[in-house]
Structures are given as C-alpha cells and as structure tokens.
Length: 230
Ligand SMILES: [Zn+2]
Image (cartoon, rainbow, N blue to C red; front, side, top):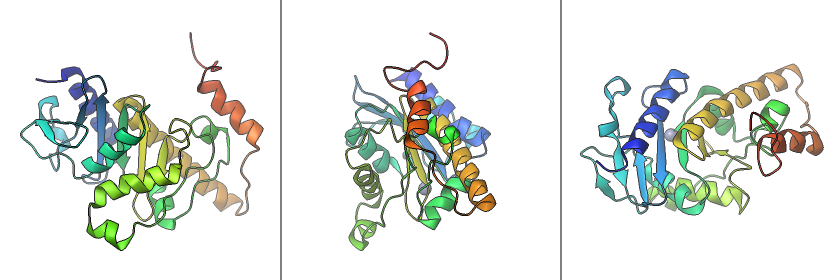
C-alpha cells in the first residue's frame, strides 16, 4: 500500500476530531499530503468512524484523482486539494462543523483577537470568507470553497492564519501535518468559544494591542520562537 505511515496519521487525525467532540454526525474530515510523492490521503465518505481503518483512507493525486482506494473520498476533497495547491507550506487540512466556530461562520463575523490564547495561534483575527456566487454554488462548489478561502487570505502567510471560517458554512484549518491541522480545529473551537463569552460579558470588548499579539504569536512560531523545549 502507498504512503502507509501517512494513512495512519490521517486516520488518527480524523479520530481525534471525534474524540474532541468536534464532529456531529459525519460533518468532519481531515487529510494529509506527502509532497515528495505528490499524494494526498483523505478520509473516505460516509464510513462510520468506529469501523474506519487506515486501509479505508483514499489516496489521490494533486488533481484529486484517486490513485489508491476502493472507497469514495470525502465530498470536500476538492477544497482540500485547492488548499494544498495554493498553500505550499501546509501538510494537513481539517474541516469540522464544531459548534462555536460554526456559529461565527453563520453570523458572518470574523473572530477578533481578544486575548493571548488566540494570539498564540493566529496572528490576527480569524477571517471569514465572502459568499460564494450562484455560479460557484452551481458549479464546482467544493473547489470554489477552497478558492474563497485562498481569496480571503489574499497572499498572506497561511501559517500566520491557520484557519478560515467559510461564510454560512464552517471552519477549515491547516497545519504542518494532518495531526497539527486537527489540533488547530480543536484550538479554533476554543478560541471561538472564548470570544463569544468575551462579547457576552462585554459587548464592545476590543482586540488586544498588536505588540501583545505579536509577542505571543512569535514566541511560538517563526525563527525567533522560544516556547517549549529545544
Ligand atoms: Zn462542511
């Protein structure tokens, strides 16, 4: 079997979304990419999580064509493919309809950076896309969803903004690996929940100053990072 290690990583990332309570019914999927081989591994569509094995994962190329696997891939495959093609630095993508992040997506509001918990992971607000056009919805909808995310990032570093809310839909997150993407989906849910509570306590709460935000973000990310063990 191709990319056996990546298959196990992607299975584990999908199972972690369920363990963290981020997946309702089957609304969730995670994938990973082996850049050196040009292969994407993604969850199959509609297989119960309890029965899913690494062998059930579907392997595709960077055009989304199935290379190995008997099952149909997740229906969101084309969104994942677009993100891998446009964001060279990412190695994993995770999509959930987790409650609080999805509520912000439905409200069509970006999540302001209200505190350092947020700034440890996002170097600014969590953005929300515009609406897809009628043509995009009628056409290649899943690829257009990826395009909307890419447009919203507008050339910014995807590692500074490791997730985007798709308007009226839900979040897509990414990271260096499938596991990191799944973890980001969990962290984004916590950030969304904290922001909602913040606004319920103080409806005109303000974002933290840029210096404080960057202090926290850059401690964990980039060449000057000092967080954790060497
Ligand atoms: Zn969805």
